[in-house]
Image: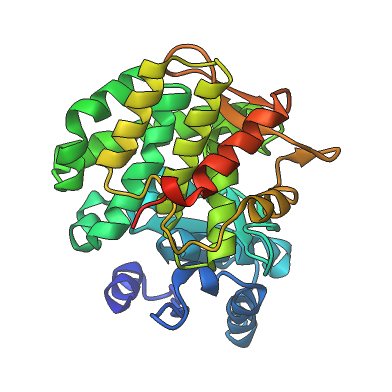
Length: 328
């Protein structure tokens, strides 16, 4: 933080830089810090330092920091500029791009927030050298969705190169970040406020958010829960007859190679009723109808729809909640 502050001040003696370190520790894991209370710490600090509308908020950190700082920037004096400097792969390939900002409520994830675009995103893959392996794997899990929903060549590239990404090969990391940001930016340009096609970026997220919420924020990293969620979405798509067995197997195999969970553990508190109650308040519910992102057709194709057999959804939930299909 101090090195960043010094770099920002270098060469401009008139630039005032204030820093605030938000809580993130073992007692309060990242997603658990994404609250209205901690959001207030940002805005209160800005007021204490008498920042005006010419201020620029800079989010230096992972997705949780970016979400909170972006939302604070949207709220403070009704909007100030902000810059994203993501330091995790998850933030580089997903949360820093597209202008989604939010905090969690006690019962649902990212339900309080705003669409607010950063003026710049600066991603340096060199910062990933010290990222914990678990955090890196979580980010790799997230990038797989781009290949499944819209970019078949990228999926095939990941099949050939995912181990290089996990080994932090610089060229592989740069290709991963570039391809992911390109895909997300193209979708956001078509649908900034998620009225339709942008929702497809949430493949596996409806299931994944339910897993995160029930387990308690911070128990799972986001990409870990999404890994299980993508497995669930792929299985449901296959069971609906919308994708082939081969594509289902390729999808699940690649998620597993990302070194994230693909099934619930034996001690998970999730059951079918929990899934159903949490998903009922998902942001993609419209007129009481749960819409899902499911794979349909060849690799690189998906649909965002509420028109699916509810019995197959129920069977999917029952399958993953069955102790026989969980991991030790």
